[in-house]
Structure formats: C-alpha cells, structure tokens
Length: 485
Image 1 (cartoon, rainbow, N blue to C red):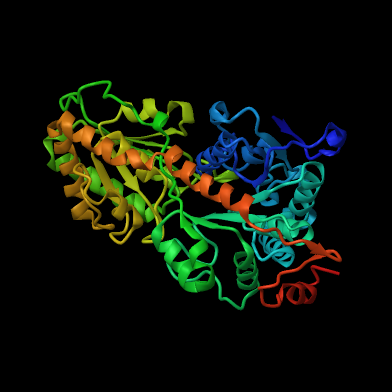
Image 2 (tube, one colour):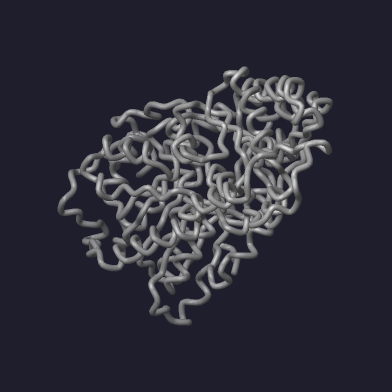
C-alpha cells in the first residue's frame, strides 16, 4: 500500500502486536535502480517473519526524472508492506525551465556550485544533504503513529543516517545500516573517501558506534570497515547482492547457430567510461574479423544510460550508434519481468564493470547463474573475479588489454558451440547458493532476532543515555556549521 506522508489519521486504530520495521529505502520499486531488487527482497523477508514493514522512499515522479521506472518490480512486493512517499526530488534534475531561478537560468554552473554547498551545510553529502529535515520528521511521525522496533537505513543516500540517528537519539529505537558499497571508502578508485576527523568521518563513527549491524556487499569492503573501526568489527556482515531466480532462464530456448550469427549481450547500467566502452568495441570489431564463429555475430547492449536530461543522450550512446555496422546495437532498458527472456535470447554475456577490488556488482551473480559463457571487461583485481573464479565458462579478467579481450571474445564463441549441457548445469548449481532470497533470508533472520533481543537505551530528559560510548562531537560540529540552533 502506498501513501503520502500523512500518517496522523489512524492513531485510534490501535497498534499492531507485531514488531515494526521502518525501512529507509530510497530506490524501492518501482524505481528502475539496481538497488531496488535488494530492497524489495529485504522488505519481503521481514514480512515473511511477520513484521510490519513501513518503507520510506520518494514518489515515482522523482524517479521519472532520474533513472526511470519499472512497474513490473512491484509485482513481487508483499501487499502488506506500507510505503510512505516523501515529497523529495533532485533539484538539479528539474528540466522545466519555468521553474528555474534567475541564477540557474543565467549562470547554471554557479547555481549548481551554490546548490551543492547548501546541501552539504545541512548534511555532509552533496545532492541529497538537503533531504535531512524531511527524512528526520518522517521517521518521527511514523514512529509516533506506529512505534518501531527497528530502523534499517539503506544507503545511498547517506543522509538516511541522519534520520536513523534522530529516531534513536529521540526515542531509543535501535537501527542497522545497509551500506551496500560503503561511505568512507572510494569503491571505484580505492582508498578512503574522507578522513576520520572530517564532518562525514565524525558522522560515520557516531553512527557505527551505536548501530545494531552493518551490512556490506563483499569482503574487501567489510575488511575496510573492520580495520577502520575495530571496535565494531563483529557487527560488520557481508550480505551479497545475489540474483533472483526468475531472472535466469532455466533452459536454453534455442540451439546456438553460428551460421545465423551468435548473439552476445550486456545487461546492466551503462555507467562506465567512453574509453572503456571504446576498448570493448574495438576488441569486438577485431574479434569478428579473426574468428569465423563471430563473422555474423551481434552484440546487444541493454540497460539504462545516463540520468535526467542526459539519459540516452551522451557519448556512450554515440559510440554504440557508430558501431552499428559491426553488429552492435542498443535496445534500451529491460523490465524486470523480461530479464529472463532477454538472457534466454543470448548465447554469451559481456560483463563490463567499473572499479576494482571493492566493487562486485549485482549482475555478476545473475550472469553466472545463466550458464552462458562470460567475457569480463574489468580490472583483474576486482571482486567479480573472486565470484567467478572456477567458473568453467568464464574467459578470465584482463583489464583493458585489447588483445586479450579479442582472445576472450573468440574463446567465448568457441565455448558457445562446445559447452555441454552438463557444464551449463554445473555452472547453475555453482550459482545456487547466491540466490537473493537465500542470502537475504539469513541476514534478515539474524538482524531481526538481534534487534528484538537487544536492550533498549531509554531517553532521559529528551536525550538518550549511552553508557558505553565516548562523548560525541557531532553537536559541536553542527553548531559551528549553523545546522542546529
């Protein structure tokens, strides 16, 4: 059930005896975001345990101007999940010039710079910092209406953490954090994103000091947090993304026909650089010249390219169009309900990923479970390499070495025609432990049990007593920044 923020009309209806989760999940379906799958499964698993679940997100109109919508994602959302949509949207993605200020219309670069400064004065996160007040008030209103036993904040945006802290500070409601990729770590380039003594660093330390649990998607990110905050190491848990069974074809719908032309496919967000895509297309072009099995081959790219006004209007789109003569095409996004059918029409997959050892991507599990040959285009030291290690139909990772990528395309083509049904079945069995339902079920069961068993800190004179924590410097930092009166 979806509703606006007005939750004041049902106080007399009484309170449920079931435990209640407030789930800060900006990106929940129908948002066409990769995080939507994880969020949907998380909420569903809490409902499976008979929790009341209130999801806090933003309205479809806000996602329409961002990454787009996929209403088929709603088909598997438990109907008892309550969804509260806050009136929030990215101001910088507004395209109606009638709503532009004079500064934005005449000096757009200066306007954007000033906007980012205003956002970060409210909370140390560009783009979303200004959402803090609305999020904080929302969780307070929801808790007043239906007392919460746990708050789970899924990041990004990291401003969700301010709302988690507000509810805990005011009412002692325990909270957990699903970082997915992490805040203080630069998952794409490696290294730290900010120092421990920065405003963001103080926020993160305070949040993690008191959280029930911290979820991240892979071991390298978990190691970062266990090293940076050793006193909370036992609360850091790897909860991998996994894949949905209904996204993977169970049987091959056709027999590969090299004479008619093999079809390679990429499915996912097209968020890599034009240089990376250029190397891929050059290697593809050369492989088609060298390998007879690829002479009539096609390479289909599906997914979202860009956001807002730049959606499908950027350099990546132009590169794909210029490669049309080489059998390359862009087919746009794929509805969640049609993912399995899309994979079922391909003979091999191309896994193009940014980043290195701290990036996994949710798609690697889905790719693996198809039983199709996989060509990797990412750093050698990438978490996806660890997931795929031992996959008999994987060509290996060689970074952006164009000659090695040519060999990879050729090897994958041979795998298409030579792979046995037994090999494909073996690959799928290898992927079975990575179903999203299995991974999230275990994580949610553990978190739910811990939250209900943990002692609650009680507010004293409007503040929460933290007997084992060091004095926090957050109030001091925020007063100096003019955030708190």
